[in-house]
Amino acid sequence: MQLDFDIQNYLRISPTDMLLVCISTLLIVLIAKHFFWDKICAYVERRQVFIQDNINASIQSKKEAEQLKEEYEQQLSTVHEQAQDILAQATLSAANTKKEVLAQANEEALRMKQQASEAIEKEKLAAYKELKGVIEDVALDAAEKLIGRTLDEEAHRTYVKQLLSEGDDS
Image (cartoon, rainbow, N blue to C red; front, side, top):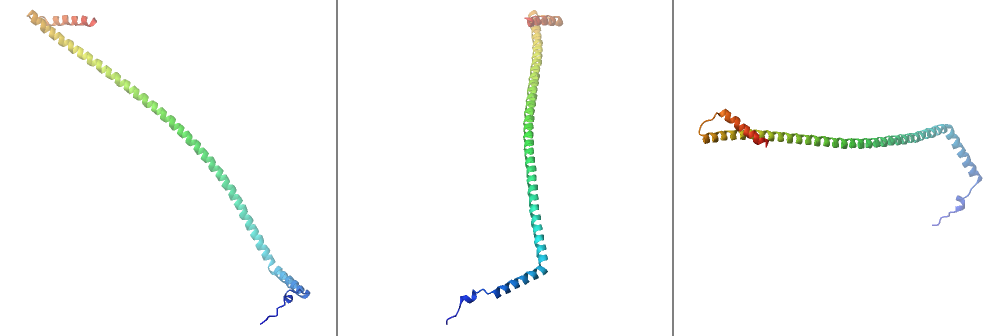
């Protein structure tokens, strides 16, 4: 089966067809303009306003975000400076506290050393007095045994004390 297909019939352009297409297009445009044109224009206008509002809001949001970023960066630098100041103050305070503690420890050590020296001196004096008393007693006993009689104890003690004090002076 063979088809008779002539392409020329489909590609033909006739003035009548063209006129009918123009008239129908004009009628469609007139009808659309009469019934839908205002609605389409209003929709397009609302859409333009909506898009422009979104663009403006985006620009405003971007400006606010940049401003917030600048504020945060400024706060961050301020906080960093404050942290440096606090660290410097803490270091200085620690050094001062160290000096104070060392000074107090040195003062306490000197005081304890002085007290120990005073205690040693007191002990020396007490031991010296005790030794002096023992020497007096021994000298008195030795003198009694040598002489063979009891001497006036008080006079003898005075005499021994004089001898010991003369020995201290030399």
